[in-house]
Every structure is written in C-alpha cells, then in structure tokens.
Image 1: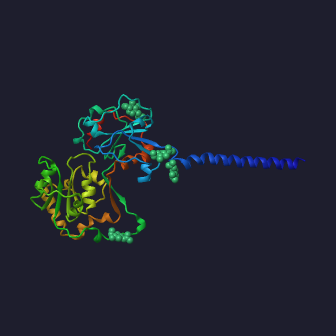
Image 2 (image 1 turned 60 degrees about the vertical axis):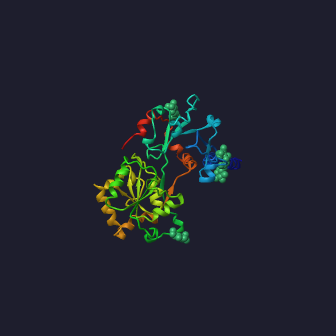
Image 3 (image 1 turned 45 degrees about the horizontal axis):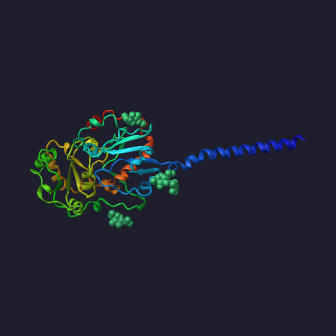
Length: 349
Ligand SMILES: *[C@@H]1O[C@H](CO)[C@@H](O)[C@H](O)[C@H]1NC(C)=O
Ligand SMILES: *[C@@H]1O[C@H](CO)[C@@H](O)[C@H](O)[C@H]1NC(C)=O
Ligand SMILES: *[C@@H]1O[C@H](CO)[C@@H](O)[C@H](O)[C@H]1NC(C)=O
Ligand SMILES: *[C@@H]1O[C@H](CO)[C@@H](O)[C@H](O)[C@H]1NC(C)=O
C-alpha cells in the first residue's frame, strides 16, 4: 500500500519541479528576448540645425540605420514624454530659438547640447551654464561623439582586397592642392600657405583665386593632386572636419594637416596616412619633404596602405547622428549637469 503512494508522490514532485523550472525559464527569458523594442527611447529634436527639416515618417532609425527602439520626433507637444530633448546650439546662440526653461523636466529627462562648431564659432556660452545634462559634438570626450567622419573596416566577405597600386588615383600632377572658401590672411592656415608656396607649387581653388569648384568636381579635382592641404579654419581640440575625411581621404590625396596636435589625429586616423605640419620645424622643410616624397614612389604609396582594409564614412545626415544616441544611451551617466559649459567647450588639451 505504501509503495504506489510513494511512486505517486515522487511523480507529482518531479512534475511540479519540471513545471516550476519551465516557468522560471520563461520568466527570465521573455524580457531578454524582447528588450530593444518593448519600449522606445524618445528623442525630441527641439529645432532643426540650420533650418531645413527632414522626414521623420515611420520608424526612421530602424528603416534607415537599422537601429531599434529609437523614436525620433520633432513635435514639441511630445515634450512631456521625451527621454531626451536635443538643442542645436547655433539657433540658441543667434537668439532664433529659446530654451523652454519654464517647462517642468521629468526627473530622468536629459537636455542635450548639440554642436559641430569650433569654440571660436560658438559665441557666448555663459547663458547656457547649468542647463544641459549631456553634450553631443565632435569632441571625443562628449557624452555622444559625432565625428565629421571615420574609417570603417572594409567588408571582409567580399574578399576584394586591392593592391596599393590600384588604390592610388592615377594621373596626378599638381603637387599640392588647397580649396578655400573663406580666406582670411590673418588665419594660421593662410600664413602657412603663403610660406609653403615659396618652396612648393600649390594649386588653389575657391573664391580666393576665382576658381570655385562645382560640388561634383571637387573630389575628381583633388584626386589628381599628390597632397591636399587639409587646413582647419579653427584650431581646437579634436576639431577635424570633412577637409580630412572627404576632401583628402575620399578623394585619394595625402592630407597635409593643420589643426589640433598630432595626438588628436593619431587617435582617429591610421598611422602614416597624413602629414602633420607640426612635425616639421619650418614650412621650408615641410616643402622639401613633400617634393622628395613624390620622387620615392614606394614611400608615397605607403601613405595609402590603410585603404586596402578601411573605407571612409562621412556623416552628413542629422537623423543618423541623432539615432546613434540610442545604442549608447544606457551606458551614459544617469545624473549629470554641465555647470560650466563655457569651460568645457573652451577646454584645451
Ligand atoms: C521588434 O524586433 C523584431 C526583431 O528584432 C522586429 O522584427 C520587429 O519589427 C520589432 N517590432 C517593433 C514594433 O519595432
Ligand atoms: C517605436 O517607435 C517607432 C517609430 O516611431 C514606432 O514605429 C514603433 O511602433 C514604436 N514601438 C513601440 C513599442 O512603441
Ligand atoms: C573589386 O574592387 C575594385 C576596385 O575597387 C572594383 O573595381 C571591382 O569591381 C571589385 N570587384 C568585385 C568583385 O567587387
Ligand atoms: C539635468 O540638468 C538639470 C539642470 O541643471 C538638473 O536640474 C537635473 O537634475 C539634471 N537631470 C539629470 C537626470 O541629470
């Protein structure tokens, strides 16, 4: 009599154990399977940078950039539900837009300061102290770094590695080229140009010489130059613009750079892919180095070695920059205030 009842109890016990395990597994599994698109992070862009707006129809971040759980909006009525509110600095600085300081902020809501301008073009920042929780700029130490460009490893699946011979554009003739739209004789880049042209030939395009290049002509023209003077108009920490990424790297000319110190370039660009003016005591020595370099085909080709494994990505769409917030959101400090934004922006090295 005791024997079957023991079996029954054992059977029931094991069944219960299995069921319990099953439910526990389901309980722990479901949130993991669903994270990412159970809830959306809502990013409200308070005003569009420089005026023109772009479509935010559908699930923009997913449809265009394959980023999940990111709801990008520009309707101010959605303010109360926004996890982040992004303010582009320029319109605030010009007084065209105002911060909604009268609106209450949800405890977790973050206000984000967005700018791609150098400190010289950022005006007075004091009115913006103690307002923002996060920053979004080209700076590597911003909460969200949005560089003008970067290098991505080439798609290895295609197995299409080209030899260095193939990746250096052919038919090069002008030694160095420079495209300048706003020439100012007092800027450091103008002083360096004026001194450099004493020792090597520099072909200048843009308003200065009345040789404005059509956008479709820009890269083909530069690709025929051995060197491109990627001279920034402002010298500031991490301020490396499309002059490097697009005009030089994408066109296929070796960049001669003037901007932040060599360390800043080394942090984002491949070694031996650019020539930094600070590595030469005088512009005459720089000029001599460039002239000799094109005589040594192998040495010149080494400046292109990175192109067999990397490709250049240039960022132009504000939507892509804003969507990039979402995958990084949870790793950023939950509590933060830029008490002295002015000091942060003007930080040197
Ligand atoms: C949730 O994610 C899955 C796969 O990651 C995707 O197929 C689905 O469309 C997403 N749903 C929503 C509402 O975003
Ligand atoms: C997340 O946002 C996208 C884009 O606005 C929307 O299509 C999607 O339905 C939202 N998903 C959830 C779960 O709210
Ligand atoms: C390989 O790369 C070269 C040069 O970039 C290109 O012309 C060619 O079409 C590519 N071949 C394949 C199979 O993708
Ligand atoms: C965001 O900044 C405001 C203004 O300084 C501050 O009152 C608030 O506590 C900050 N919020 C978070 C989540 O850090």
